[in-house]
Image (cartoon, rainbow, N blue to C red):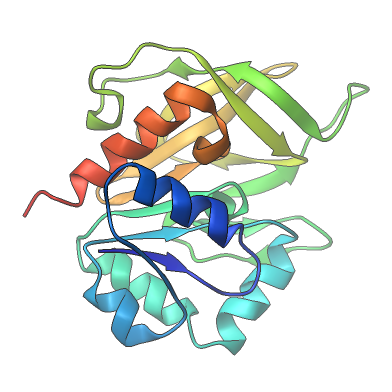
Amino acid sequence: MIAIIDYGMGNLHSVSKAVERLGFEAVVAADEQTIMRADGAILPGVGAFGDAMSNLNERGLMDVVRQYASSGRPLLGICLGMQLLFSRSEEHGWHDGLNLLAGEVARFRGTFKVPHMGWNRLNFEQSHPLFAGLEEGFVYFVHSYHAFPEQTSDLLATTDYEGPVTAIVGRGNVFGMQFHPEKSGELGMSLLRNFLRLTEQK
């Protein structure tokens, strides 16, 4: 069973349906018992970093997510959910994140169009089970802020938008995808499938 963590700011339905289309049971969950019982967990997100952290805290889910990460079972953050995995973000003033991955989230800076929105090519930075059987291709991004991991070993894939942009991160059992895999065609769904397969490994 895959827990889709509900803290009031995620595209829960589309993520849940994508998981089910891939043949896995998905449960939208906002309680510790259900989340901690899951074989894998997904932290989706749409909106502002500070608001998301406040919602997680108010619903008692901040520690639950950290406990889940420490359990060794696979955890995936999507879009804003990926950014929440990091130490802090400058979005609307500095806010602390879950600090599961060391690094900061900052706004795009330059004269180019923000938000970064559209299909961009992934570049795999290292071999990883998430990429098993896959080739680099295009996925769908919508974001104005992007992550800067402190440890290069956490950087699994990048894209290019007026410079390198963090696209996929991972350390141990904790993963993040800046794009929306459930909206990214065959490659996005294949990446999501490979994550879900990791939840089957005991």
